[in-house]
Length: 79
Image (cartoon, rainbow, N blue to C red; front, side, top):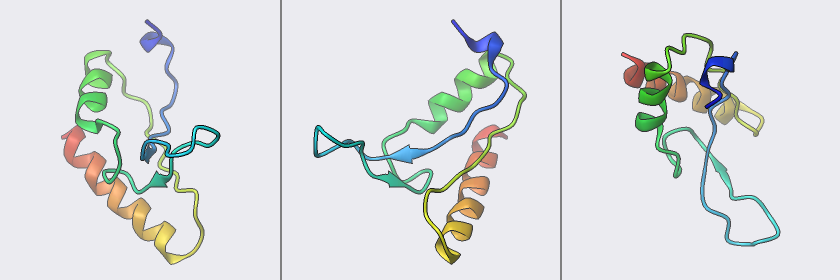
């Protein structure tokens, strides 16, 4: 419905919430419950060619490694 209006996508991954008062835990892309193969396929179907802005809501060396791994993971799906 809104695909033609997408200017950027910020992919994130996470787990289902265990506490109804909080969001689920954020995890590295590819380690959570988001169906990235389906998401990327749909973005391609819509003709989306904009950026995938990878973020990770932690600090330190693990953040950098998670972002690098997410880049590889998403590039494999994009083809």
